[in-house]
Length: 436
Image (cartoon, rainbow, N blue to C red; front, side):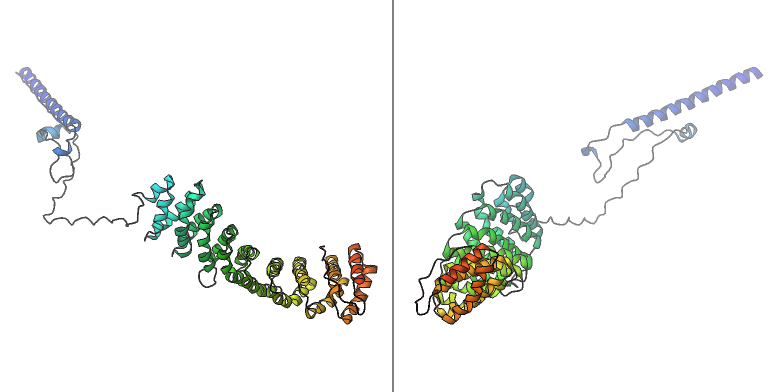
């Protein structure tokens, strides 16, 4: 009986073990089906839910699961149910500015295509950032356009943006594109309308220093390409003011270049006469560059001026600059202007006062000053009637003829002495003035 009882217990234990193993197998099989099942398509999702529904799996008996201690996936937290209150509508999408695109394309599309026209349209955009992007793009696109003549029509809008836009960055980059065009375009019809607004921009107080500087540099490129006298003459006065009186040295320098071109071109006597007075006044300025500019321009202006009364009035300051200025260049160019005046003016009231300072200059330390004085006196002496004036010059001419180390000075001093009219003799015809 004991053996039969042991045998029954063994059989019962085996049965229980088999049941437990079977339960564990069922649980493991169910878990594998859950993990390996493919997700449903979007159409199979539960309405209103954000996660994919997982198909139900048969649950193993609690006792069996507890006995098998099989792992289970962590539960996914359930999404909160939608509120019965309707959701607020999304904010409206901001519409682009009417000019945000040119020909249906943005700046990013226009720039690689090299569309100058489309980018210029964007310079009128009401949005500051859009205009800046267009100006920056233009500064890079314009230099790549090989046909400069095709850029003529873009000069007016670029000039407007350069001088008038409220944003400094737009003005700067539009100005770069414009400057490239102005340097390459030679059509006078396209360039002439640019001059007036650029000259107006030179006026101190009208715009800031940077824009005035830009205008001066641009004029230095534009004006020399224009040869229409009537189109240029009206700008002599404002350019003269900028050249001589602007507080900025760079503006003075660049404004002087177009002014010099106009003065060498115009035959308008009113314009030329109006230019002489400020140029003569500039010879007395402290700044060497201002005096130098005036001296360089004066020979051209004097040569084109036909009003001898105007020329007669400038002889004394020209003599002073020719013989006494500290700068050798000023002395040389002022001397050229003076020589031109003395050759054309016959008024003894103008000529007589010139003889004595020229005679004294024969003893100057500078060789060129002594040579200038000797050459000028050799041409001037025959036209002087006042004997007292001539007698005061004789000792100085004699000394130069005998002792000057420069052979040319000695030669021209000798000529001056030999050409002096004798007492009672009429002055000789105006002799040719030699260059030196």
